[in-house]
Length: 382
Ligand code: GLY
Image (cartoon, rainbow, N blue to C red; front, side, top):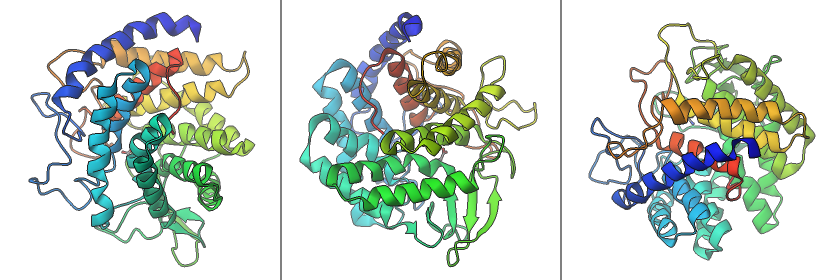
């Protein structure tokens, strides 16, 4: 990756400068997105009446801590560890509340508690992360061999599994590696196998949601979820699949996971537009031209991680596409100034939601993580 290191250095300089003041300003918060004045919200603010899974247990709450651990790995500055631990400790309250917790305990506790334990050996973090892993394992449906995604809100979701969950498997892999108990890894692999068989289409495009009968495990249907519709190709979901199967391969060495990651990656690379701007869905109509910079960063990060598993001569095309995507973000969709707490702009949570093109803490996480990958800074937290 030497050919891109100089460029990455300039972006890292901008990230450091921004995070210096931004981390201090938001040191007691757990941010998700910025408001119209560029200020981060706070999902841990108990004076706000959040919906049942939008507050302290909001699925993105681990990414703020994750950003700080990335900066800690880069700079070695203790203050980043100190601020990261604020959100880790606050989120622990979710175990007491329990109701509203979901499969995204992986997204919540890998970049916080697992990262803390891996980087500092903090025994308290090990306890928190093991607790989260036990909750995630408890969501496994042994007949359908899948991890249940969400809780029932407006509909019965007992049989729903979603592509995003591949990232939560990291928590289970870590729990087995750390405790020596294979059950966590076994559950993770059974889920990954189910996803491989039921979510990945022959052309490498991916379903967002698959519903199984929760009693018999029989596949019932697939749903469009956050993408354009059933049969479409939600870009962030493509990223979760490509990066997620790469992670499953790294933890298990199972060749089929690497092949699946490559298949999804090849599909993504064939569909990245000439402009390098990533739409919300690779199969959405040309207008409105909704973008998702967050999906862009997840795809780029996945391509860079996958490239590391490839021999020389094969890996360069993945690296080149990843950097093409990241350049567009860094040079046209990033705010490194002081008027906005977030860096990455133009993210979209879903195709059909009324609002598009806003900021998301996890877009910043995956952007920063990907830039550090180019330089080889830090270890993989997943
Ligand atoms: N995990 C949900 C999302 O990517 O928006």
